[in-house]
Image (cartoon, rainbow, N blue to C red):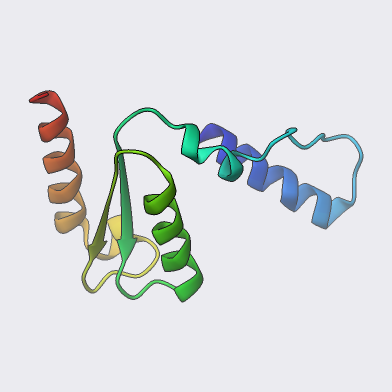
Amino acid sequence: MREIVTENLVVNLFLLFDTKLVQRPDIPAFQRISQMSVPTLIISGERDHPDARANADRAAATIPRARKVVIPGAAHLVNVDQPEEFNRVVLAFLSNLSKR
């Protein structure tokens, strides 16, 4: 997550300030997600923007051992729109990991 946030910050800095003070990583995180080796939960909101849902689909198809869950009635901020369902899904995912 830190790399993704950093890369997004870097992109925004380039767009907003056209600065040479910040260097982009050699290979963006999204191009390396197939290298992830841990179980990954991808949560998507049913009412999220189609591009965001497509990103979730791509990540789920690319990350080994990924599990994607679509939360009904939620938009982009799933944890805000449907906090109880979000918590249930995350806790179930973590609970299953601890049983391995």
